[in-house]
Amino acid sequence: MNISIKVFFWFLVLAAAGSPLVAAADGPASSGMNMPHMRGMDMSGMHGMPMGHMEAELIAARGKVNSIDVAGHKVNITHEAIESLDWPSMTMDFQVPDDATLKGIKAGETVDFWFEDQGPGRYVVRKMRPVAPPGNAE
Ligand SMILES: [Cu+2]
Image (cartoon, rainbow, N blue to C red):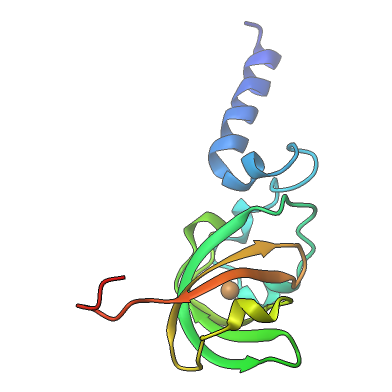
């Protein structure tokens, strides 16, 4: 191995290790390469940043429903940290285009939910269900 090949090889290793999103995207050029430096950044800013194209992969999360806006097709949730996106716990809106997804969900409930990251400010819930209270197995 000459030196330039070695350097390139390590670049690939570091890029892959530093950014789990690279694997979820079409390729390194399309997205994900800019994620590691976002650690510790203000998340409200992050949500407005262009993140490039990402596949419609469902991301699992748990959180407390603060409010439901049926007409506006959105729900405000204080979610727990989401490791796969490198998000800390935070309060934010998610879009819910399908009314059936919110059926039986009430404000104040803790829920498990699954959403698509569709890029800048578009986090679309595809599935949601209340977390069963302790001692009340599903
Ligand atoms: Cu968030």
